[in-house]
Amino acid sequence: MKDRIIISVSTINGTRHFNISKLFKRNAIIATWLLLFGLIITAAVIEYLLRTVDKSQAQHQQLAVQASTLRNEIATLQGSKQQLEQELALKQDEMLQVVNRVGEIELALGLEQHYPQNLEDRLDTASINSVARHAMLQLVPNGSPLEFRRRSSRFGLRDHPIIGKQTHHKGVDLSASKGTPIYAPADGVVEVVRNSKEGFGNLLKIRHAYGFSTLYAHLNDFKVKSGHFVHKGELIATSGNTGLSTAPHLHYEVHFLDRALNPQSFMDWDSANFDLVFEKERSIKWDSLVSMLETKASTQLQLSSHKDAQLTGVSD
Image 1 (cartoon, rainbow, N blue to C red):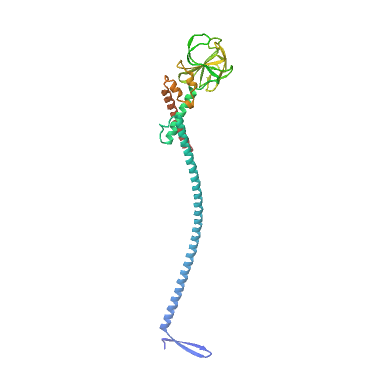
Image 2 (cartoon, one colour; image 1 turned 90 degrees about the vertical axis):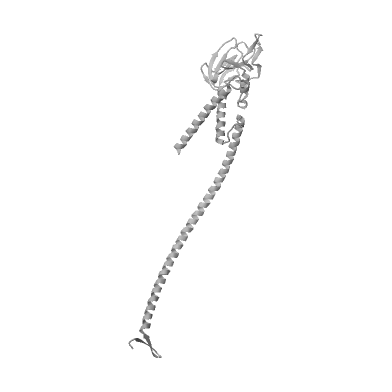
């Protein structure tokens, strides 16, 4: 009887007795502890899962924010890409225009058969050639020194209208009204300013660069003095009828190393007809002059590029 436990349950219907053995009791206790342990483990698992869900939700929200940010950045980048594509298309059009323009310049300068394929080299070549041409047209007499009605006498042998003898006419006579402005055909220094009533009458002479000089005769009055430096296009005198002259006109001469040349070759010479004077005045070694000017232009271009590179380095 000591290994048994009796449980009595009383009700209105009477009392009932239940016998429980110690083994059953032990098993019940173990089961109870196992149940409690299971409940604790379950509670812990549930707590862990809840925390994991909360963490996952927080990470999901963070990822959603990051995704929204990335979408905005992608939209911005797409907009920038479209803008850059438009700018690139414009730059390509501009580059095409530059290439076409360089081709036109090369054609005008006579370089279409000789330029390098690299655009930068082509630009350098065109720049050097253009600078050399500009220097020549600035320093060597070219164009007409005044607006005239007609050319009354050419360069070369002629019958002198007053003396009546055949003489070598060292210039051209350009008929123009008295007081017509006369302009310097190139940069230079005024070498001679002379008043006279005989021969050439009032006379002016300008010494230009590279051995060239120009002479103006039968002038009305002077606008410069001896020793003055003048630039191309500057007013130097007005036409007249002084000295041995039958009518108002300008007697105009061009000299190279004090040798008279046909002024008409230089009067017809300009940027549009740049090679004209080379063909008409073959006694002058134009190649060496052009080569010298191109060398100077190339040196200036290199110095300018070096200076630009230094300024860019300083600004960076």
